[in-house]
Image 1 (cartoon, helix red, strand yellow):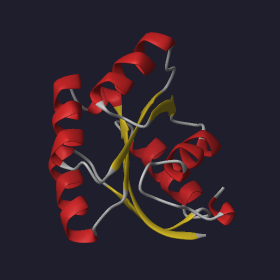
Image 2: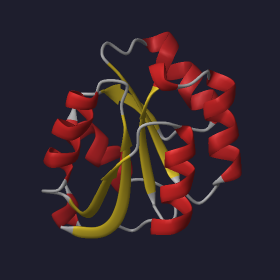
Image 3: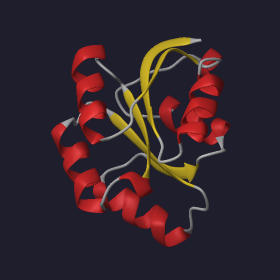
Image 4: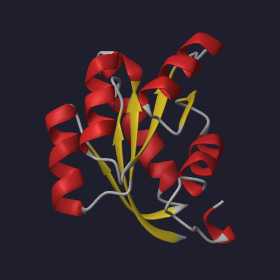
Length: 124
């Protein structure tokens, strides 16, 4: 387990809770946010390292602004069924990956490889 702080924000509260529960096996601190304001709050209060956000929760320009505002935070975009075009748009705004919201290992892998974070192999 690594000591990164992770913020989970998903449009479906059940998916958010399930994802947060699964991520607790990989990261010490995992919090759930319901909207962009709560994400910003957790980044500032909890000094979050990674944000996992459903692309349905915000417009791409809002996600781009979030990435620009918090350059030190890795953003992993999620979707029920991400495709190549969605992945490309997420990469263009500065996200570190775009994964299925059910792909816990992919999300952990993306967080683990976030520039500026040297995570131990135990995080994977």
